[in-house]
Image 1 (tube, rainbow over the protein chains, first blue to last red):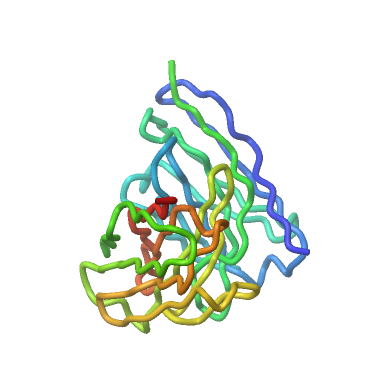
Image 2 (cartoon, rainbow over the protein chains, first blue to last red):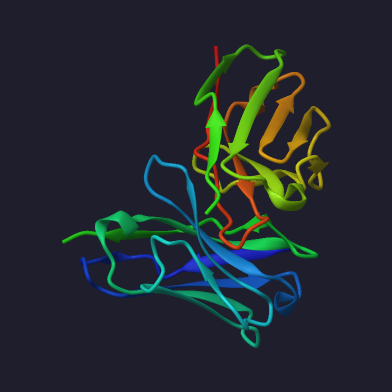
Length: 120
Length: 108
């Protein structure tokens, strides 16, 4: 059974850093691209970042480019999102999501999300 | 970046009625790389449709997707009580995989 479990969400001060993680099981992690998607309280879904199975390139939404870094450790079956220079607009539930595969970058499995709150 | 505009923002229906949700892209979505998701309150999104018209595993056949280019539609043939939720479209044809703003299907 496929399982994704995010962790690391916290209350952080504006300008501060935070790293969230996503531990996966139930599938061959290195074979699938992964993404982070966030949802601000009461708002819609916002795609954040993408990394392929081999991690050789990365994509970012314009709102986070230059501040966030996606990475993965295939030996640990874990996806990461390093977030720097956080602002109140980054407050959201952060979901990790597994792509469907075969170069179809939609998401068939999601974690339960981890809440990041940016406030002083 | 491709912008996806969903309409209507809210759809008020009675159980058993037909639901038609629209997703319009600011430019053509390559290879019909468009997906639909359902999100119930307090839950993660659930994939319903991919490649514009293919149902994901375990999705009932009352859900169907159609369209190409810039105009896409999700249809629920007869809305069941568990279908009242928010629905999002997502394009994955270009390297920034954007979502639409969502359509809330509520009980009339």
